[in-house]
Structure formats: structure tokens, C-alpha cells
Image 1 (cartoon, rainbow, N blue to C red):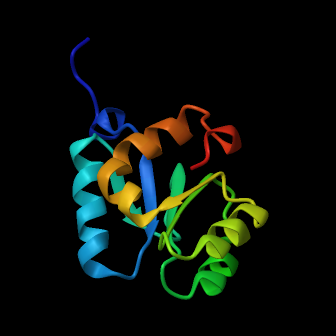
Image 2: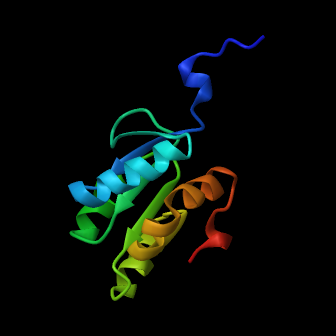
Image 3: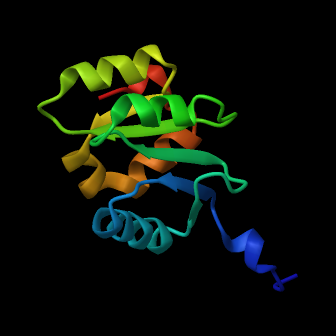
Length: 120
């Protein structure tokens, strides 16, 4: 049986809460290249990626009701943001530079069960 639906070819639906249009576009491209389907925050998804570089407390609060794994990224000079996100239950929180380099791998690891023990 070689016929597949478009949905079956997608590895995961990844919701992005990333108001930075340029960086968000880069994330979307990396995720699509890895076989994921980027969707807006609030859409049905398997994981939520949250930009914590601007208004981190607002974004932490905004994503608090999500019933799916959360992957956050922050400015490397704001370690307190990482701590607040982890305390709020984010499964993974990484510096923005790492997110830029490894977005798809980070999503894949979290989906495969690489939660709190795999932070950093």
C-alpha cells in the first residue's frame, strides 16, 4: 500500500508562539524541512514552541493552559527567564542561538520523550 494521505507524511504539528516574524519564518522553514507542519499557536498541535525573548512572563502565562509539551527559547543573557519557564512546567528551555541551530532536532527529541532530564 503506497498511497498515503498528506497528514500521514507529517511527523508532527508544531504550534509556534513566536511574534518575531523573521525568526519565526526561519523556525518554520527548519521545521518544514524536517517533515513537521508549523501551525499558529492555538491550533491543534503535538508540541508548542514559545519565544521567551520578549515579554517572557506574558508568554509563560499565555502558554500555561497548553495541554501539550512546551519548548521555550530565551536570550542567553537572561538565565532567570529559563528558570521561570522551567518552574512553570516547560519540558525544555534552550537559548535562542541553540533553537536557531537545532530547532528540528530539539522538537524531535522532545516528541521522543526527551523531557526535563534533557534540558539545556
